[in-house]
Image (cartoon, rainbow, N blue to C red; front, side, top):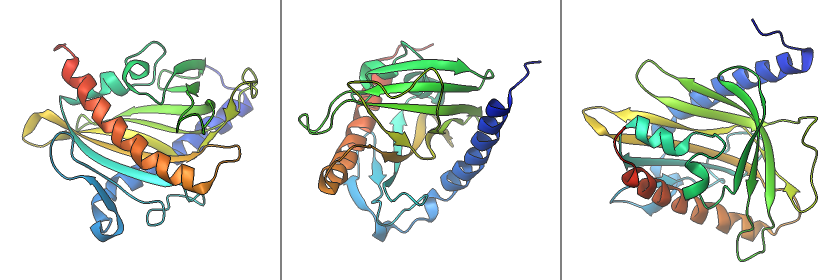
Length: 228
């Protein structure tokens, strides 16, 4: 059995508390009033809704976005594209993920990772990096979730050339669609403080378009996968 130091124990306890919080959020998606959102795409594959931060505050930080989409593909195939691993498929299709590094593997399901993002919004948003503790959780119904929140790690201080951003409790979950084994509901929660000094208008315009691109590119990536 692996022994943890005090810092690791605190990190794990915090992570499990965040997972409980996220699980409640995932379960409450269908309870959000449709009048309090703006529709990005209503039909096709995927179809999804992105919720404005003004209406869905998931924490004290107001930059909260919730996405709900149906992707053509089994949960296993969708997860293969989403899972946070170095040199995985995510860095190939997600334009907002340039590099993914595992700083420390605490348990089989819990790790501390660094994510590097490229510049965005025609260079207005400089490259960022994020350090998070991530928990991967699998459920009896076949759902798979990735749950994360910001943390610090002694091997990864802020670096020149990158603005250190902070992910508040966030994650995504792949849920089997009842009666349709080749479809997956993908729920996403983003609560990202980009750090630095950015006009609010830039942030507010970046996240909706970024999430729309996320779902579109995810669907393309899943479609390109061979059966496994």
